[in-house]
Length: 264
Image (cartoon, rainbow, N blue to C red):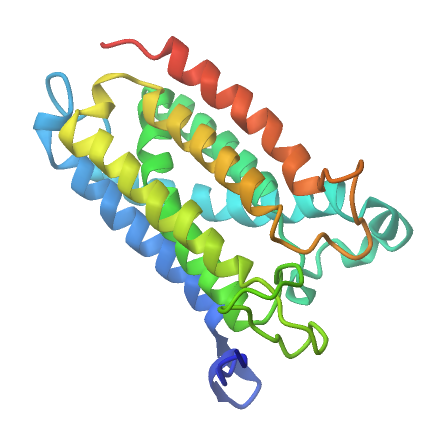
């Protein structure tokens, strides 16, 4: 299959250009905030009354944005290309050149959520659960944007749906970005939504956070078998990639949250 002719830039006015990647971030954050407000407005989801107000949710947005950007960038610097940034520290702030790590971004958001909860004297586990339930929205749009940008493509293959990416050489490859959008985005969101709305998952603080870490970690670990490793890193050990290595703590943290989640 040929790569679809989609311009990464939606429109451009002078030096300003709106890209699909930026729109994915904006859509994920705004839709996620709206989804969290829906949770806060449903008393039946909580043991007695909503513990996180809608004002808290709107104020949390800036903290989450900072957590995503700072954590995602620092995670990429530390995990994926430390030698380059040690030699060229001025490039650390050049986020427009690309280079963001999901694991770093997730860690940054978690720190932001805990800090915000401490400042507002909120239950940090409940706030983390709400944030975890919304995160797959951003993951879904982000992976679609990766596909449009023709980046993070998969390994070579001969499956019927393989795609020849413009910057991936003349060989067909797995559209691993779409695999990630399906598993880490759509499927993960659906599972968490069922637990949240059908089984009142918010009544067991830490459960949704644990499920998010566990399912994301397992999905990403599996998809890494179809995704091309970073050229400057390659395989860490035989078949193990950096993405899979970073998923191992996620799996352990997820199990820990699930095993310690108790009804209020």
